[in-house]
Length: 133
Image (cartoon, rainbow, N blue to C red; front, side, top):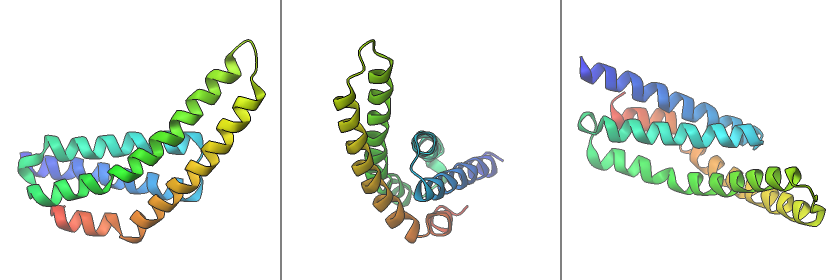
């Protein structure tokens, strides 16, 4: 039964990840980027926790293929957090906020490119098949 449990949990996390990828592909808003990062961490955690249930090389390759998206999403998210902090400060550094928002837009474009590449590979179908889900 542990095998069934592991597969169901991993499949659920994979589905959530793909949903979040699609959301970011449509709009890389603050909430969408945050949700994507959470879904990546949870899916990768499932692959690590249930490691004995999956072919090690296939799971590792899938985890690594998410690294560029996670890194790009992290940069975007960092800009979101810094902008929020800057706006909450007593002195609103409008030039800094404008520059950060511009950086965020550039990084969100890069994130969109990474997400688009990943989605074109059909992660739900291919990864589920590789993992035997």
